[in-house]
Image (cartoon, rainbow over all chains, first blue to last red; front, side, top):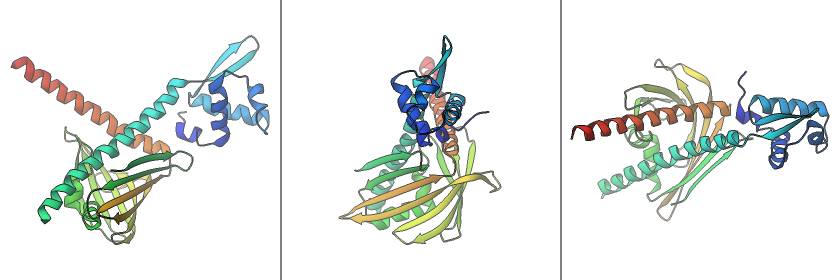
Length: 106
Length: 162
């Protein structure tokens, strides 16, 4: 199932998890210690983030460490940049149209 | 001229604020008359082609973004509320060529104000799903890239024959 990446980061707990593991890879237990919630709830958030490919898992001995996939986060920035560019382009065209309209009125 | 672009992912909104060096009536016309809209609405290299536009509450605009290859991507906008030269609200959705909307769409809120000959336009877009917004960009971006690559191809061809 392909998840909506923006829905994944719309949740405040998931955003907090992203911020935490951006600094260092962590186990689910260590992540859960930072939240006033059950470990099951944290596991569920991690599963969603994993399905969105926002986080990577790495097995170290008996523990699984979660870390942030930086490339995926950059994808979001690039996507927003495209959206921004559309509006820049659209509005610079409107500038030209308005200046033509002004000349015609004179 | 001021240009602000902000996306609030948790509120699922995008807010665009832009100033124009023109009077309010002129800017208002540019947003509400189809002949003018079609001149700037589509970011290059696309063309905007408005088939129907009836700017009144309950009215609609049915238009296509046309790629340089001539492919049409239709959208349907419906006007929810209008306060002349101040504000209007509309719903926006992709549609097929027979005006059947592909839901969910987005809600657009546009506010206009003038100060000393400078007109500020504020556009707030609310999306039911940010995935849809992603789709919207993906479409534009892919087509735009293709168009750029195609014109590069043509340019290279011209150069090789020169």
